[in-house]
Length: 605
Image 1 (cartoon, helix red, strand yellow):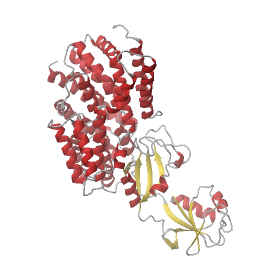
Image 2 (cartoon, one colour):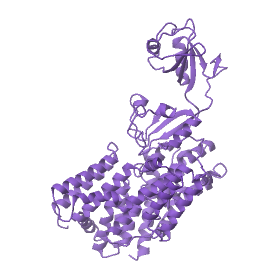
Image 3 (spheres, rainbow, N blue to C red):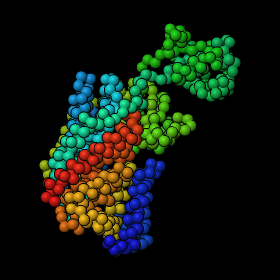
Image 4 (cartoon, one colour):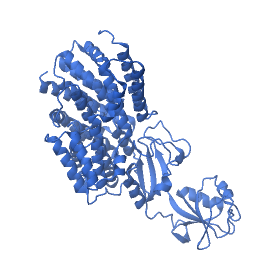
């Protein structure tokens, strides 16, 4: 066993463990944990001095090249989303689902994986989810057999290049800062292709058979709420009663939108207003409740669009122009950790919330729907006009799944796509570092009108930024205090009897387990200096060990909390936690074994 390091290193190691635990807790916002970590490090090293560490230098994590690159690429990716530049790709992937669903699934997996090698997989998944949900609903195919394979395929593809995921960029940047030559864009594409082939074949041929048919929240696309009016007759209970008394008769469940008296007069909805014969109460609710109100009040129920024929078996409740949609709460959404009431959702978007489907079954909806605090992955089932749903999608506030509308496609779509291709090409051919080419891409998006400044703000994810800043600061503290060296010595001591390829495999497995429990960026940033130290202690090249961290930290397959897109997929497909394990664990084993064989062969270990 190696000797214990000094008290500063022990404190940072303990803090790292506490941080990883806090990142895994749903109740604590990720950005809160990240900010607390940064403040603790700054204050701690200010009070308890350590040679070579100036507390203010932790603030430099905000200017880290990898973080700047990640933010720039997120902004450029937002330009593709806003302009609808990916619609032709989406149409290509959607084509053929009704005629050849098996071949269409393979095409979706391959295109999704290749696209994710050059774009962050989050916008790829966000783009594909509405398309695949719509295709599934129209074709009678269960979305649960399609969405998990698609999401995991994008994670595989994201491993292939330095810009495929933020994790790759972070690891490459940290390794470069420690003196290791910077990896090129395609330097580790070959092992990913070799290991990715059996992984994609598993997702295509086996995974759909392992997944039970789940009923997605959008499986029933019939409208649930109807705009109606209750006509107050002479013998109605409501005649001569105040609005307060009328609502009390319905146990305060009925919500009156407006009161019409005569042809053109609308009465203010004051609690003390006394209703008269001939008044029309405009209400919106489910069919069962509307019929119950009709019975309780002794009024006559009409469709709001037809005041001549009372609702009956021959004249059913109508909902022309109404459709359902799912709105999935994402991190960075204005509804994240807020309620529908506080965010004024109904009045802002002219949509009626019908139900909330929680991403975690244990977190039930308690109390009124509008007063429920929303979390990442929650799905709000809403109803409204097609125009209102289109406006909700265009706002970028959340991921909208409606099964009917198409992706926007503007006249600037080709310009945005050309800018993205230029960003990738400049970096791929070594003409510019990816950080500089990505920033040029942001400028080009703004100057050509593909993006507005308000779109820029919406594309940046505060939780992700704070996770990266906190992880980079922790990684710096681990290296400077000798904590990373000590952990590496412990790892080498525990595996010293094993051949080097097995040590490499064990490190990758450790990263894989960690990334499915906490943030993949946190696992990668903390694991990279440890991996480099392990390689130097073994007397071998650090490159395969750096790649082991990249590949292990990207294998967020086994749990829905392993990666942010997994939660979105879980909600959209109506999955359970165990469904990810059924597919994710076998896929993890396949990829881990493939990399464990491929890396030693390619690097002569």
